Length: 171
Image (cartoon, rainbow, N blue to C red; front, top):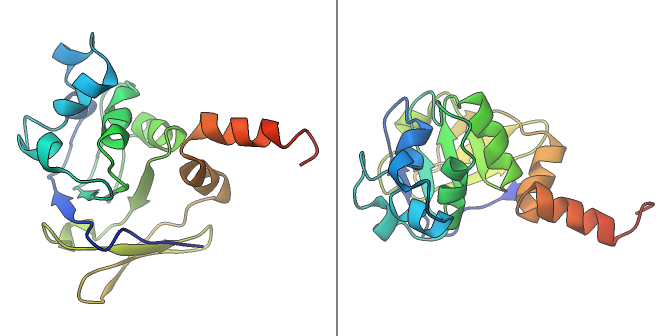
């Protein structure tokens, strides 16, 4: 299966160890996701929430999404229209929350080779994954199991379950 980033998608480069408090700052947790999202990454990229466009990609160093189990960290990225996050590694709880909300995570050891603003495409399946850079070079990414890709295509776990229940028990 092939998923492509939109032609005008751009990479937003971040460093290592981006934690869930940076993605969904605690001071805004009493508000709804629309407010939380407007403060997403403001401590490291103040312009991010107001400048990110639907389809854009976040590219980070190791340990993206470490920290708390707050689902709003992945939810803020989804709310802002981020199509994928590419990093060498992810926090375990963030990883599961992201796929549950339909956010594609691509585990790529060489993610830090990707430049700020670069347009990307990717090909992923349960057997292989590749990120295709603007210059045509390919970076290897971990394969993604079919059940996780089903969640991404459906927009998250709950929409996937609703789709399956509407088809009946034997679909």
